Amino acid sequence: MSVGEEVRTEQAGQQQSLGTAAARNLATTTKSVPQMQEISSRWLLRMLPWVDVQGGTYRVNRRLTYAVGDGRMTFVKTGDRVEIIPAELGELPALRSYDDEEVLTELASRCRQREIEAGQVIASSGSPADEVYLLAHGRVERVGSGPYGQEESLGILADGAYFGEQALEGDDAVWDCTARTLTACTVLVLPREAVEQLAERSDSLREHLRRRLEVPGQRTNKYGEKAIDLASGHSGEPDIPHTFVDYEARPREYELSVAQTVLRIHSRVADLYNQPMNQTEQQIRLTVEALKERQEHELVNNRDFGLLHNCEYDQRIQPHDGVPGPDDLDELLSRRRGTRLLLAHPRAIAAFGRELNRRGLVPETVDMGGNRIPTWRGVPLFPCNKIPVTEARTTSIIALRTGEEDQGVIGLRASGIPDEIEPSLSVRFMGINEQAIIKYLVTTYYSAAVLVPDALGVLEDVEIGRWR
Image 1 (cartoon, rainbow, N blue to C red):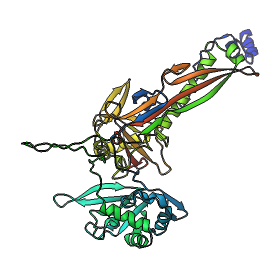
Image 2: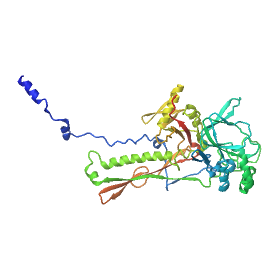
Image 3: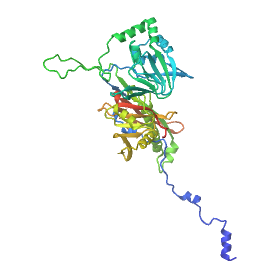
Image 4: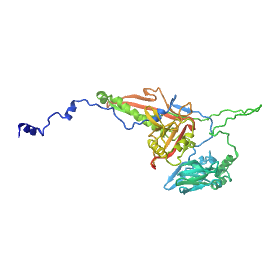
């Protein structure tokens, strides 16, 4: 063995140079700013026109409207038994504004539960209407005859809807369309006979029904607003009608909601660990991001002012085949003028894309701040992961007309608040406690208002799990 070979053998088990672990102690590490998975695109906050609100309240003045109620029933389910909340019977046109709780409770007890299989005809067009159907669960299609005798769909009804209300308007009422189940349905049936029997014993109910039949309704336009009397196409010197525009006596007011938290930072951290990044700035940045995520969630889901809960019943539609298709979005867009944007959960957009692929359609896209956003009929379809997906893998698609000038949906905020870092968002120093912890109050104020009902529409119960 040579001398060189002996040296190599001797050094085979020894480290011959400085290792990387030790060398890192002398190196400067390149670091990223703190990352946060919760941050989303927040297209709703970016696209919604924001209006500054003085006094924390925004009042929506509207022309007087005689339509009342939300048109949707609420039920209570116990096991396999379903019951209607008695006060919800006041949604029926014949019982609207009737408030005798004892009578309504007895009427609710006379509703009979019925389970109906898919594909069954509940009522046929032209047949006598003597029962009101309250749809607790399932989907029902209303079918009529077209101008040339062909069958045409008049709309899809889902949970909470009712039909056959004309049964309470007189003995000669008939069905003006055919009602057919698309899925297995649970309905509550209220016979006209039960209402008549109870009216014989209840003076208040009998008088209410009599007034509903005898007193003519107010003249309204197709939107339920008090009619403005006009004359047109006349000649000569006829009497010109006199009129005025009446307003709602108690318009809705939107108070600004709030999202806030107290951020705590130890003074030692803020003093000593600020290079190369300022710890206070990064803590505030991530906290603000979380507040904005909560703000968008509330704008979609809040029961008081959220978009999903403030859409009028006649602006809610059901998909004809469950999955979101071009026909459904066309129907959604047709309910309002000047739709500016559509909002959908990313999985709903994927389901819509699958349906387009199945039909051989390719949607156009539009550039929005460097992002390619798909469109339908020229209306951009933005992703919004705040729209909930149910356990049954259904969700909703929201259509919006926006802006005060177009009587649309607007965001509400309060600019100019103390210690503001962005409009309606403030970071306020709260002091240092005995443990040397610095506290900051981080606050954002916001809300949303729907100026007229048709500014907001929702395609409900969209299936996102079906592949075909």
